[in-house]
Image (cartoon, rainbow, N blue to C red; front, side, top):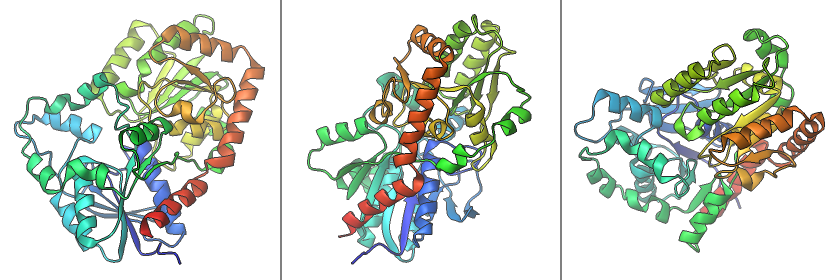
Length: 412
C-alpha cells in the first residue's frame, strides 16, 4: 500500500520569478506535477530578491524566510555577489517553519550545506525521510570555477560553521535516504565515492507541447528580427556558461554569414562576466549583431517562441550538470550544438541529435556552426532525432512519475 500522501516539502536557497534558472525550473515543475497527483508540495526558501511571507505561483506555494550570510566582514559588494550566486545562507526561521509543517511526509532538499543541514535535522526530529537533489555538480565543478564561486568570502571568518556543526551539514549527503543527480556523470562519481548508497540518476524535463506548439513569429515580432537568421543561447550570464567562447566563435562564423545575429537570453548572475561580454562584443565590432535579453519570466510565451524561431541553438557551457535548455530546443524542433561537459554527453548522441564540441575550443565551435548552417540535411536530422528523444522520455509528467517512485522506495 502506498505511503505517498501528505506534504512533500522542497528546500532551496531562493525562488523568484526575476532570477529564474535551471534549478527553479526543475523544482517548480516537479512541485506542480506532484500537486496534480494530490500531494501538497510547498517550497521553503530564503527571501533573497523578495519579501518574506507566502506567495502562490501558478498553484505552487512558496514560503520565504529571513536569512543571513554568516561571515564577519562581508562588504555589500560581496553580499550582492553571494545573492546572485545563491551563496550558503543561514535561516533559522526556515528551520522552525519546517519543523512546524503539518502532515510532513518527506523533505526534498535541493541544496546542501547549512540549508541542507536544516532539512536533515528536521527530518531526524520529525522522523521522516529526506532526499537531496544535486543540481549544480557537487564533484564535477572545476577548481578554477569553484575558486570564483567562493571568492566573495575568501579570507572572511565564517561564524556560521557553528550552525553547520549543529545541523550536521557535513553529513547531508551521507545521511540522505536517497541522492538524486541530474547528470549521469555526477551519479557515477557519487557511486564511485559512496558505493552502496541509494543514488539515482533523474534527468530534467520539459513540457514538450509548450515548445513544440510555439509560434516563432511572436519572438521575431517582439524583437524586430523579421526574417533574419539567428543563433540562440539561453542560460544565465555567468562564467560557468562560457558565453564569451560563443561570442568569439560567432565573430568567426559571421565572416561568411554577415547577416546572421546572435541572441542571448538569461538573467545576469555575475555582473563582472556580463561586463566582459559587453567589452568583447565591442572589441569584435558586433554591437549590431548581438543581443542580450536579461531573462524571461517562466511562463512567458516568448521563451518557447525564441527556441522555435532560432535557426540553431548553442550551449557553450564549461560546467553543465545537465542542460535543460537542450531539451527545450529539442522540443521546439531546433538543432543544437553544445560542449562535451558534465551531464550533456549522458543524454545526447553526437552527430545524431546534437553536435558536440570541446570546452574552450573556439575554433571547433565555429567549425560546428559553419557545418550546421551549411547542411539542411544535418539540421533536419538533428532536429528530428532530438524531438523524438525528448518526446519519448523527458516530459515533466514522465520525470515526476519516476521521482514519485523514488519517494515510494524511501518511504517503505
